[in-house]
Image (cartoon, rainbow, N blue to C red; front, side):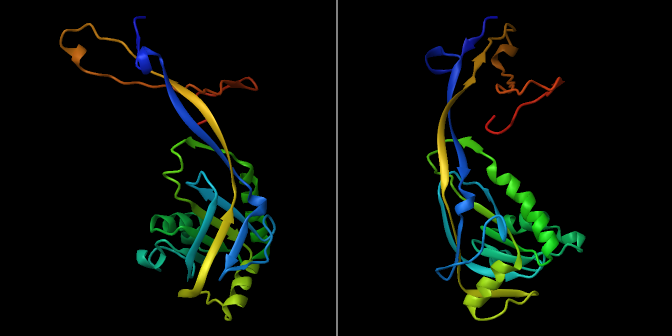
Length: 239
């Protein structure tokens, strides 16, 4: 068709270094004031990690913000902190993922959602446990952009452990700044993968328009036909 490669030395291929990341969630360690909390992953809490492709050790000042809805705190209250908020299942403005995202946009690095209703806690923790087997694929930048965001869903047991070390109960409403740091430690499993893009160009023939460029792209890793159904797209993890 007359295409020319845009890769190295005229090749049609552009190397794309990727890293596949999974976390050893079962051996997650949580601490408060340097003391390990006696809570069990998968039973008392679950963890969801974003923006991380290496081991995590994150120790941050802890602040409780009630239900954590927008307007109940200032950005400086939560920025670069571990935020504890109380689940409010009957408040449609306080849906836990909506509140989590608002706190993260305001700069929180760790969001701890305390679920007081035992049945609801068991349901949410079970649901989030299913995601812990997921593998995340990103561009391999040597960890330069490793800036983890941590979301923890937990029963009241975790909060009670913190309160015992703190020496006082945590108020359910209003802002409470804790005396010490909350810390999470989590090991990552990394696998380096060498992938590639296909890149090429075709010179136009119009004497005027040939100086302009039109770019188009397509997925290289289309997932094709599954159980007789055509999937018009790709598995976007790393596409």
